[in-house]
Image (cartoon, rainbow, N blue to C red; front, top):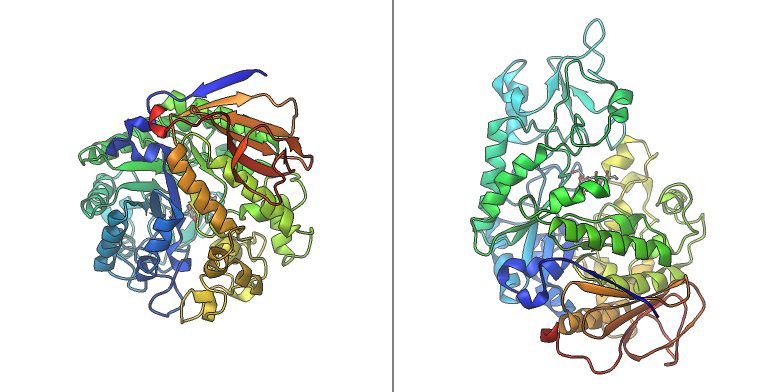
Length: 565
Ligand code: TEU
């Protein structure tokens, strides 16, 4: 039996000083519009979250991350922010926010909020000023305005495409065009402008002063831009290497912004934390995760990986190595509000061209083709989740994954909300299927989401996954997550992992530093079981073999207490 140990640098859990709480935290992502609705308007709100803080505490998480709850026209689910320092009236008030912070802190839970700095909403006062100010006005400088092309300027400045389909430029009344990498309602900010820089520092202080513990930074790799004159074509732009000098993506100078942010974070005690949503080449992730920059960065590799031992091992090894290089801890993500939920990804045929191809085809067919094996998808998802929850570093959970929810395919076209769907006229199916309001109670209206119905239709099969049903069932996914998180707290140890060779390409086995062993069978064949089980992701469990597509946590010999790590 050969061993290979990966240990990330600085931190250990015994260094559980307040300043490093995030290093091995379990952070639960709440998509506020779809979590719980207290005021019966069909949209989730802050008091809805407040009504479930005990649920969150009992689940055993360490922190909550709230997706945007700021005033917004919801052109992109709240990622179109009209005021960075207030609460959307449909979601509550600043007093509600303060109450939520207190309720979470009282239970020992931290709170992370989402900062959306690449773009504002077109309803933000700055953009209204820019429109009113007209061509050449100082107010336009806070955004990226250019003249059009063609004899009368009626063609966009370039042929650039937005992420949500169609041109990345939109024309305003006086004939100028503005850049929007995302929806039309999300004009990109100009990060060369000192007021833009200063205002975000004020926003970070505003929420830090209210007790927020950390920030999730949206599209962290695209803020600074040096577009060039003349502007490059789309083909030229795409041909440019992304090596720090690209006109728009992952520029080195974005870290000048984060150095300023860092001084704000570090002016608080404990220092405020941040995690970058940066879709960049792995070799450049440490730039964002360095302590001088944002301090941590999402690792999305598992969103792109199949349920496959070799792929999981590579992702884990590579990311622990990256974390070491950056002096950060690794992050693990299986689901979030932008991707197809992992039980569904794992219940569809193996991927073809891109990570999500079968899942997107399945969604487009309304959940008919290719055939989804729901049970198998959930079985694999539970195995993957238990594996990930045992890794060194922090894990980000997405609301509803603890219930084993599948993606919802059965959303009629006319009620879909995602701008990606609307703007591409259905060519992109969009992300509504993972944003359907949560089921709390099998028999209540809107499954207990709220008395005002749900803003996206909930399927009948939600009843079986409702929190009240799963709470009463020791074999449910919710019960598994609760046990896993409780055990994780007891077993959590230094950020170290040792691979133990299994002699089988479809079986992974590792040990954390203190006799905490984790074994996953990725194939369907069972594996002789070498220990005494603490937790198993599937049933029935005979005791002497690990069934296929299963993770087991077990110990060998006596488990020392977590302090010994
Ligand atoms: O996402 C940024 C992003 O680039 C990817 O999520 C991806 O391109 C997109 O989701 C493809 O469908 C962040 C937020 O997570 C997302 O919800 C927002 O829509 C986006 O920024 C714009 O703010």
